[in-house]
Length: 161
Image 1: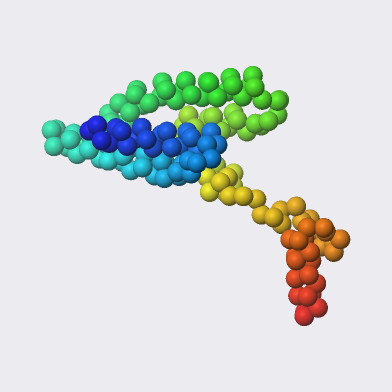
Image 2: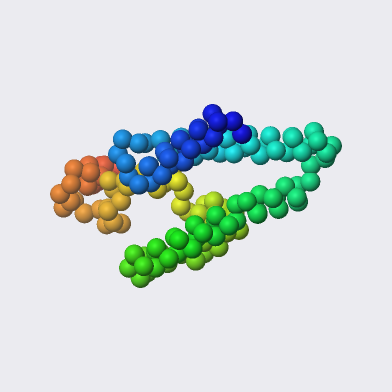
């Protein structure tokens, strides 16, 4: 891997960390993820093509075993750190799904787990709807402009039907 791609990867990681740390002037968290995945795909493809060029074949089992030996120790460390920090610094019950989240991360199926759970990166980044607090009852006594607008719209559409 060249210095340029290593530097780009480092920049991408720093952008993601800054985004999650809440640095207000750094809004490139998603761009950092895209850059990191692009570089990772390039590296993986380069390794596989190099193996094919040198040996005439690609042995995926050996490739994945090499990746596991390189990545799993760091992943175990991260999961232990997150678990310990959550246990020490968060009130009990703050992260009820952390065990399942950790297991899915360990098995490299976390994205599927979170999709099936109904959470995504994009939902987490969006501001909640101003109508989120509107319950099923559509009372006209709401003091917010969104509530008044919502009530007016629902009343006028109810009259039409």
